[in-house]
Length: 464
Image 1 (cartoon, rainbow, N blue to C red):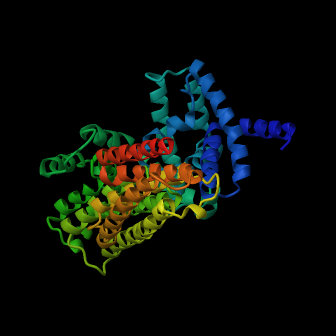
Image 2 (cartoon, helix red, strand yellow):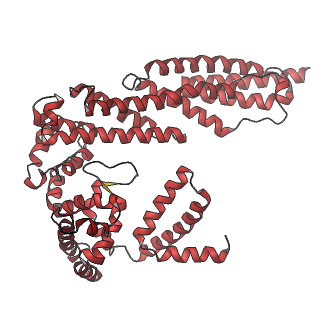
């Protein structure tokens, strides 16, 4: 792309509103992760990041306190979903905010929007700005609820001017949350910042905090429950509110109460974690696998033990699906680990090693990460139905790596000097795997054995 074309692209991107720039960046980053049009996406991302960095430098001089859309939608922040994964009750797509803001400014509540923007010009964060935001939030809620009302004449045509179906789907929840801002803030203020154990006393406190009539509607209760779930160290425990309300662990009685939506929330969130885990495994990203596995293990076990679920019910099938999908993804990856380790450590004849042969350090680290992945899976294997394959694979890895390391160390004592560098690389990789499988002390022991083998070989050569 020529410099002139790049400048035109950057000028165009700079004219976009900040919300549009942020949305475009997120979509391009997802496209890069999927491998779609990587060259084009990276080019546009590079220009966008330069623009955003420039804007951030300006903000160090002029703090960004006058973004009307950001202030309008601030009460929605706890409920925004960032990904393309389907949303549940109690969630709103972040991508829906920009079209709804544009509709409000264009025709939903244009006069109130202009008055809001004018008020922000002279307002301060601690004073009139908050009052102006609250006033506009109520006006926006009124406009949204009016157009979303079932009795609205020509409703479908009016809604189509707001945005695509996904945006329209979020319209009513956004209006209701803006309208109930004070009630939700009151609920949040009554909850601890983190609830480590959701036991009887904490459940009673949460039930008491929920006794706000405006939060007991079918539309707003999921948002209130989502707010509580975010404060829980183990979010799946939100189901305990539903069990308490039903005074039973029978799923039919739990589902018959308004709080049954808590079980749906917990199952959806577990499905989301399972989907993230599968995606990370597919991409070879293992940084968060331990945390994800613990969340899934504890959540699946919690729902299975605290709720009397039927295998053929909707909730029962959802939980079974989470376990099965997770098990299949884990088993497939676990089965591949021994083969990758063997390709690196396989002891070859001198004649089969070409001059200058090397072992890719990245491949070694990837294999070490996979071994660690198997070790982590072993901790949570029983609940995720991978007990047999995990124990077998981990045992095979220990046996193979131990035997291979000893053999490779011995190979350093003799053999063709032409291939010694490659042998040393294999030994280094084997010691790296030993560290993951057996710990630092054993790896240090094998490292000293390798050094002694090389030193002994050099002394033998000089003596000869």
